[in-house]
Amino acid sequence: MILTGPAIASAVQCGEITIDPYDPARLSPNAYDWRLGDTIRTCDGDLDAAAPTAFTEQTIAATGLVLEPGLLYLGVTLERTGSETYAQMLNGDRTTGSLGIWVHVSAPLGHQGHAIRWTLEIRAARPVRVYAGMTFGKLVFFTAYGTADSYQRRIAKYAATDGIGISRLYEEIGGRR
Image (cartoon, rainbow, N blue to C red):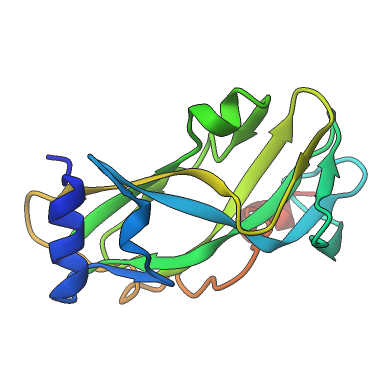
C-alpha cells in the first residue's frame, strides 16, 4: 500500500523514513516532491555495457543548464532518502514531463534500507533549461510485505551511492570482451 502525505510526515517524525533535507511543504497527498541536485554528468561518446561510461561533470550554475536532445545526462537528487521500513519509488512527474524531460524511467525502485541520493537518468525531447533545486519529480513510499531485508546490509553494487553513479554493469560482463 502507498503511504499518504500525512503518513509520510509521521514516518519522518518517528525516524522510519529519512528525507534530508526535509520540507513538510513538499508533501502532496501520496508523495514527496523531490528536487534536482546541483551536479550533472553528460555521458560522452558511445556507451558500452562492458566498459565504464566516460562523462563530463559540471555544477549547475544559478542561471541554469540547458539540456540538449540526443544526450544522456546523469543527475542526482538534492534529497538523500531512505527507510528500513518502507520501499521507495522515485519518478518524474507531470511538471517535468510537460517540459519534455524524461527522468528516471528505468530504475525507480529504492529497496528497503536503500539510503541514498538517487542517480537520475535524464533525457530531453527539446532544449530545456533546468535549475538546481527545482522540483523534478515525486517520491512515494510503499509498505513491504514479507520478511524485511535491508539493501544497505547486503553487499550490493550501488548500496553506498551518495552522488551520481555510472552503470557498473561492466563489473559483471567486462571479462567477456
